[in-house]
Amino acid sequence: MTRRQLSKRIRIVVAILAGMGILAFLLKTNLMPSLSTRQESKWYGFGEDVFPLVVAVLATLLASWFQRRSIFIESLRRLWSGMIEAKIDLKDYARRRDRSEERYVQALGAISRSIDEVRGVYRNVGESDSAIGLFPYEPLHDMRKTLEGLGCEPYDKEASARSVEALDQAWNALRYRFLAEFDTPEPTSPVTTRGSRDPRRL
Image 1 (cartoon, rainbow, N blue to C red):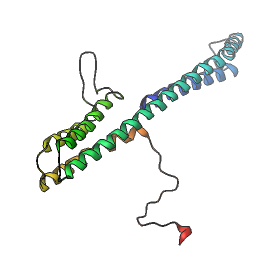
Image 2: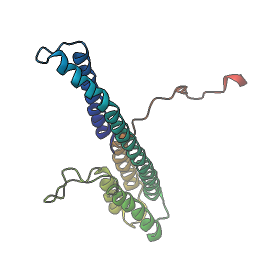
Image 3: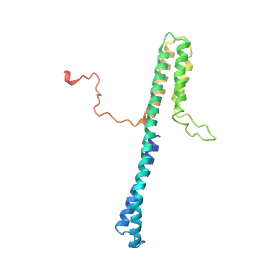
Image 4: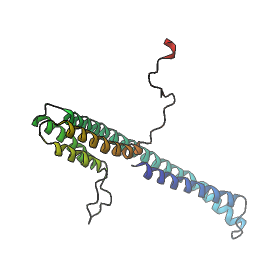
């Protein structure tokens, strides 16, 4: 379950609880002129009986949604780790002077696995019964095409530099959007100064 889906469902739960609370307040304080005091008491009593059941159902739904979100995040982490390995293989191959078909096949297999594993986590953008839709993270295909452009050709310094630059560009575009789903917080005690040392050892 994506962050957006979870947030939307939480807002619905909050709206239901808030609506029930407001209705109970209006009934309790006799602020509904369309109802007699007896009717208000009757509905308030009904609400008292039903409210615990509604809360229990909503709590169960929330627990289920958070569990689905946790499973989804774990799937994303595995996918992210696989994509990192694929990027390392591709950049290593692009920089290598001793290229071989074996290493090319290894790098191509790594990026191909990442592309296919994305489809196990996300469906295509705009996908339906009548439309295939668009692959959600096209930079992965850009990385694959960069590797295929290198092929098993002998090492060339300029071509290698262009390929590494293209891989970095695609990776940075992918990373920026992909990591947004994790909703990672800033660290409590970051170390942002280069060349830092443990202050206890100064």
